[in-house]
Length: 152
Picture 1 (tube, rainbow, N blue to C red):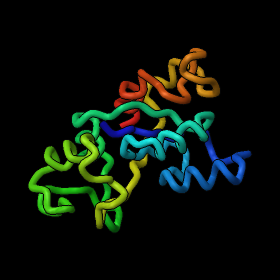
Picture 2 (cartoon, rainbow, N blue to C red):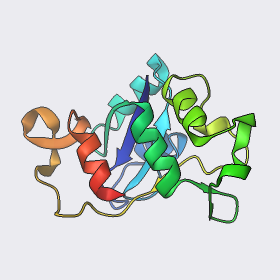
Picture 3 (cartoon, helix red, strand yellow):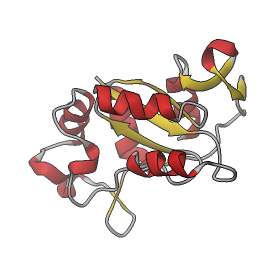
């Protein structure tokens, strides 16, 4: 399973080391999302910037929804059936490969490694400045999928 990572906090008063880690995750702006493989290296990066981002495990359905609604290729054009990168025949096949860590979204040619999301409709139901275990949304969040669906 891959991780779905969303940057919740903005760009002001972020330390240099955190900006470097966020650039490595392709999260340069607020409300950007990306999908990273589940590995100890990426988990270490996520734990290092846990005060800025939220993450959860991504399944194929949310990956497919992100690719269809917010996925962009070169020129900020939407991903359509004939221009699917990596030799995949459909978006379903590409989404399941990304969710099962067979291919990383950052390694695909011609597709943006991030998704630009909008603020959630109806607002955040929990605090945006505290961790998930402290009734917030930062860090490893079990309810992030519902928030992302409202951000699409």
